[in-house]
Length: 268
Ligand SMILES: [Zn+2]
Image (tube, rainbow, N blue to C red; front, side, top):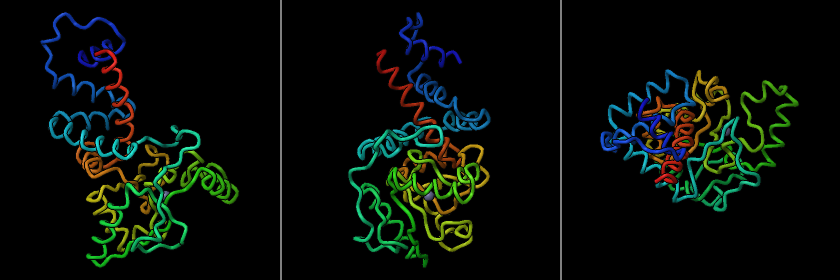
C-alpha cells in the first residue's frame, strides 16, 4: 500500500519520499499496475495481483506488446461497456466489406475494420482446416443502426430484459468494427462445432468472448457464446494468463492503468 500511496502522492504533485532509492523501479511498476485494479471485484483484483507478482516481467512485456499493437491501429483496446459510451459520432475510418474476402456470411452488408481482417482470415482458415465453418452473422454496427436495433428489442422484450442482451446505442462493441457475432446468434451457437472451436481457439487469433458464462454481474450481459471482440494476440494472452479469462477485467484495468501511467508521466 505504501507504494501505491507514493504513486498517487507523486501524481498529485506532492513531494516524493525522502529516499526514493529504497524502492526499485520494478516495485513501483507493480504498484502502479495494482493501483489500476480498483474497479475489479476484490477477489478478482487479488487474483490478478498475485498473477502479476508471480511473473511481472512477462506481464509488462505482454502488456507493452498489446498496447503497441493497439496504438498502431488507433486504439484496439478502448473500454466500451454499459457505463462507458464511445465518443459521439465514433466511426472507424478503415471499414471494409466482408464480401471481398473468402468468408461465409449470412448477409451482404457486413463490414469490419481492415486492421482486424488479417486475424479474421487466419482464424477462419484455421477453423476450416479443422473441418469447422465459421459463419459471420453480424459485425460493425453504426450508432444509428444500434439505436434502431435496441428500440426494436425494447418493444418486443421490455427495456430491462432487452438491456441484458443488447447494448444501448453508443455502448456496443459492434460500433468498434472489431467485434463479430457468429451464426446462429443465440444460445444454440455454444452447442455447434463452430461454438466449441471458437471457445477453444479464439484467443490464438487475438479474439475474446466478451460476455462469458455466469458473468452477467460483471459484464452486464448474459452469456453470449457467439460474440467475440478482437483484443490483439498479446491482449488475449494477458486476459488468459492474468485476468482469469475475463475481458471486462482486462479492459477496466487498461483504462485505469493508462490514467495512472499518464499521471505519473506528467509528474516526471
Ligand atoms: Zn454481438
